[in-house]
Amino acid sequence: MRDTYNRKIDYLRISVTDRCNLRCRYCMPEEGVPSIGHGQVLSFEELFRVARVAVGLGVRKIRLTGGEPLVRKGLLAFIERLCQLPEKPELTLTSNGMLLADQALALKQAGLQRVNISLDTLRADRFEQMTRRPGLEQVLAGIEAVEAAGLKPLKINVVPIRGVNDDEIGDFARLTFEQDWQVRFVEFMPVSGGLDYSPASRVAATEIIKVLESIAPMTRIERQGPLGPARLYQFAGARGMVGVIPAVSEHFCAECNRLRLTSDGSIRPCLFSDDEIDLRTALRRGCTDVELAQLLLGSVATKPERHRIAEEKEPVRRRKMQGIGG
Ligand code: SAM
Ligand code: SF4
Image (tube, rainbow, N blue to C red; front, side, top):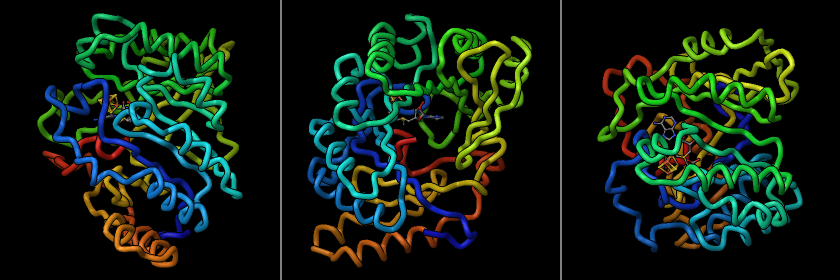
């Protein structure tokens, strides 16, 4: 699939649920968000059908996300089915890590290739403050289980928030001396109102890089494969890599290859735009695969050239991040 700006679209992020077992302050309000009713959430059969048609159109990478994808029952069977697609798309998952200690091995056996774990602090009290739930030990056990299961390379995503956890950038980065992980720092994206952090809480990529440079000499790693959003570096003598994702300040829209499917069945061509195409209605009135493909292609055709979120004073989107999948 090619969009209007000749970008190749071959990556689909599927949000399998809007529910979550944490309440990260940059993502969800304390009380959670009004959950989508069961009837509105696509069944795994429906999600699989969209994925199959998208793969038929050239999607070669699928990431499962949420909410927290591991809270949805039946995920393993869904992964097994995705792995049986003849095109063999790369299959990855983004998780907060809380349930990985129990599930990592089964995920690997079902055919999952890699996991990204979101973790913003290495301090138990701060974890509870930032996610409104205790759980650091559980996430650390989840990381161990992912390593033991061989879901590699492990990527850890950290969102530095000014005055909250930005003093831990160095602690996270130094983990890569011993571990062959990719530790990536993602700029806070102020995409929705009603959250605890304001746009001023964002620690810009340039500031993050300054902190990294103060730790040890590092070299920029040039990507071999398709460009992703992360700018990657390696400290001299380190086993792993550090990365910076300038989601707001730099926009990597020219390289964007993504479509997003929300758990209630909308295709979203841009993380930062509320323009969506409803697939659920079509699916439930019995559309053909050709019609479904046309809807997907229609969505690709509406992909905007770039976002302008950094220029907006109050960037508020209809869905919060847990409803989009990151
Ligand atoms: N629950 C899973 C998790 O936390 O990894 C998957 C869904 S979560 C919405 C996906 C990613 O979005 C996480 O890495 C999370 O840190 C990130 N995220 C959520 N809200 C964000 C925000 N306002 N700015 C930047 N990243 C955000
Ligand atoms: Fe849940 Fe992930 Fe959002 Fe945190 S970032 S509240 S873990 S969906």
